[in-house]
Amino acid sequence: MTSTIRLIPQGQDPDGPHFVSGRRESGCRVISLANQKGGVAKTTSVVNLAAALRERGKRVLCIDLDPQSNMSMSFGIDIEQLPRSMYDVLVNRLPIEEVIHETAEADVAASSIDLAGAELALSSQIGRERALDKALALVKGRYDFVLIDTPPSLGLLTINAFTASDEVIVPVQAEYLSLRGLVQLDETLAMIREHLNPKVRISGILLTMYDPRSNHSRQAAEVLIQNFGDAVMKTRIKRTIRFAEAPVQGGSVLSLEPNGRAAHMYRDLAEEVLAQHVTA
Picture (cartoon, rainbow, N blue to C red):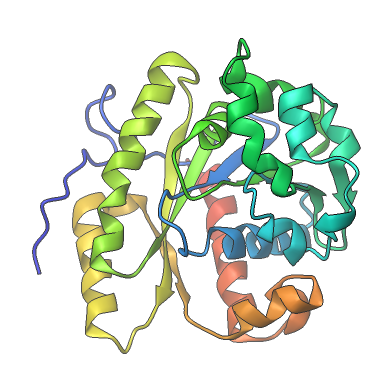
């Protein structure tokens, strides 16, 4: 299996595509999980990574920037009853504290279907790309991690996420065609670095829905490593029904089945994320 996908590996050409570790000198790490392709386990990864980091004693805020609101619902929040949501934060400049819900596994800045109109509402506003960054400025000091669940597009909501972030983790389904979207995503990040946020980088590419019994999954992983090297995270998220079952009970797989295989995969991911900060 061959590939024409090529990006400059970590450590080469400081003005080219960037894949670096997630180290900050101190304080909160703001991490977007993003991929313009839907169905790659972005939301699943935000929810379960947050729970695993919380297990390690970290203070975690999850921000739902997807109008589908799946992350909010996965934490047990009734989105139909929300008086205010991330729409109000981005469009009406409501303090983000007013949409944060405390749950057992993370604090959650919830969204609702209203967020679907945010891009149009923001389009005429000055500084529209920095709405989230400004909202976060007053609360980042309370957290060790802010994890942002982005919509499956590279529109204004995702641009807001990238502008506010230090790092991006890219969940990628273990299928060959899914890998090609990485080039477009990195081009978008290059634009963000040039005009809005010079520090944002891809800190990891996370292989999801991985089936070690499938030749196609194994080949997709090989292509990913050939093209992106150390940017590919060591943790691989394998397929399991537990990821579909956990949101039904309003929490992560760590609360559904603490000693299960699915829970341990995200504990491994949390360890890898924490180690990036220590060893960078």
